[in-house]
Amino acid sequence: MSGYYQLPGLFLTALCHVIVIYYVAEHRYSKKKFMLYSCIYILSFVSVGGYGYAAGGITGFFSYFGIVVALLLFSCIASEDGFPKKCFLFITYFCLFTILDNILKLMVKLFLPQISEVTGYYVAIVLRSMVLLLVSAMYKKYATGILRSLTTSGKRWWNLALIALLFYLLQAVVTVLNARNFMSNMYLLLTSAAVSFLMCVVYGVVFSNISYMKKDAEAALVRRNAEYLSNQMSVLQNAEEANRRLRHDMRHHMAAIAEYAKTGDTSAILAYIEEYGTEISEAAVKRYSENRTVNSILSAYAGKAKESCTFFSAQCRVPKELNIREIDLIALLGNLLENALHGCQQSGKEKQCIEIHIRLKNNRLVIVCNNTCSDKLKLSGSLPAGKSIGISSILSVCQKHDGNLDYRIENNVCSARAVLNLSACQ
Image (tube, rainbow, N blue to C red; front, side):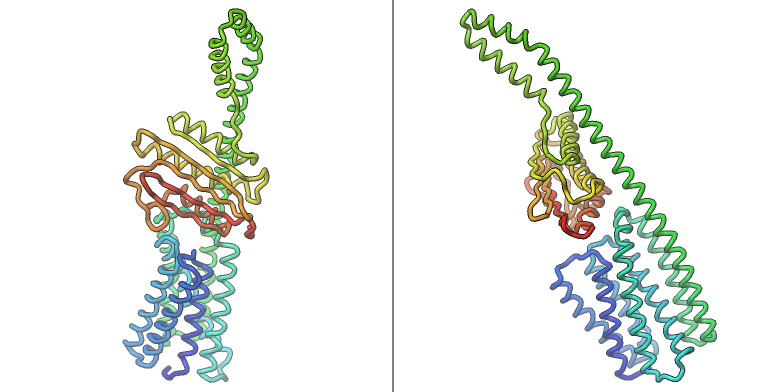
């Protein structure tokens, strides 16, 4: 094919790519900046693709390769995901794009032979775009949460990307056969349908396994919550025992104070009362929050910090009930404090401290956790370089609640700020 009538089709195709990437990828930039990069991409896609159509031959092949590379670069630039995950999503999308392109073009040839080449060209493009947008909407609704449950471990994502690449190579063979007319259109259509069906089955198994992995991770969080609550109960029982002992010994304390009073030794009375007051304060249970889950986690890590001689401070202003699943709150707050405690222990500093501030304002939960950190800790963008499973879990909860997570390092203090929109759809 040659001529200018392909240019609007190229524009529609590039626009479809942009919309899919916008809804599938984790956004790195603001909408305005994304629109700027999108315009640059669409312009380059139409220009290179149009030139390839006009030139044909080997030049057309290199033009096709060029627009594939441009799409990969655009998806990498626009997405906040790790590179292995970007590759998996890109290859999967491009494989699906190729499958639909082959099947729809063959169907137009087989079932609509009476329409012109130009009309068939646009019928295939419009139908392909509609199906891709529908699949993207289904991915956004059903699969995003499942994939977010995976860690940023490159090995897992590379394995998934390899599966996607194998299916793309199978479909590429079908594309070459179609271009060289080595098989009849009906056989090519059946072959493409078979590859598509096999791809759906394999992806179904993969996503099912990931879903089970997610449930296992949630079960682990439930167990962690039970551990926090058990720890809190132990603290309460110890405090109750100490208070019971103090009440039992009250008459002895009063007798001692009376003896000092008889001799007029007021300084001894004051010293005794001060010592007794200190003992009562140490026996008292500190309540950090009205929210049971928040209070349990803060109490548990206050105890862990005390054991490791780390200063712990918490300021919490949240109501008794929060519009967030308990399992998400545990994943967020527990991992923040776990990472902060590890950061203090690995810092090698003589004075170690953890300060956490939690507040709810305008239905947005804001958590800021500051901790002593090592001089070697570095950031990659807004997150620690080589982020751990814990940070991936925190990030997943923030994204789920239409929020954000960012880290800062200043004067050997690492500051993590997590914001969640509790009014967002769960």
